[in-house]
Length: 202
Image 1: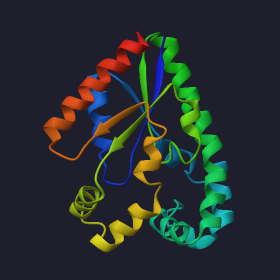
Image 2 (image 1 turned 180 degrees about the horizontal axis):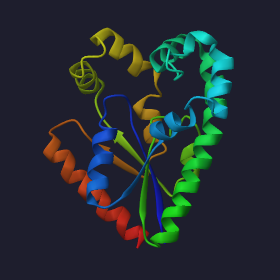
Image 3 (image 1 turned 60 degrees about the vertical axis):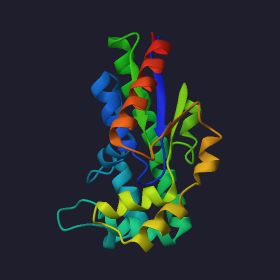
Image 4 (image 1 turned 120 degrees about the vertical axis):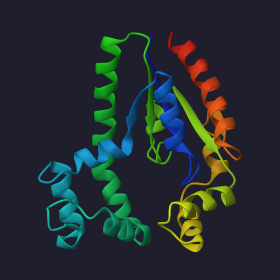
């Protein structure tokens, strides 16, 4: 039978890298952020509700939402953050389920990975057959975030601390992927995880 596994971890933990490795090994990938971007395309229902929530300041000249501006707002306004989640989460869950059903109809023993930063916070972990959490020391996360050249060390720490803590996330994990060392070591751990999940799917 097909298996739906959720993949999550903190900012800079290596979610995207793990998802890439799993996809290269043969897993199907559903990226929650990509699903959100599709749902928030101009004039779609979620876009309209988001504009009602944030106002014209949230719209770029080309009609798309200003994701950086919205991120700034919700980072400092929990009520706005919750309201946006209420707009998006039900739609994201439904779209992920639709994609999963389409995949399993074509491939009965498919392994499907949902890469979702808010997998646990949103409650979406309850819809997964298995939950994978990436374990990573905070200072390692900070270094990786800084290396991307978007945030300062101070901003990176603030963003990381605003997320659910690793200790709390690990309570929901069926599998833990440690990612504190090299890319090569991480790739081996991901390959071992893929083998275990694929066996369950088969």
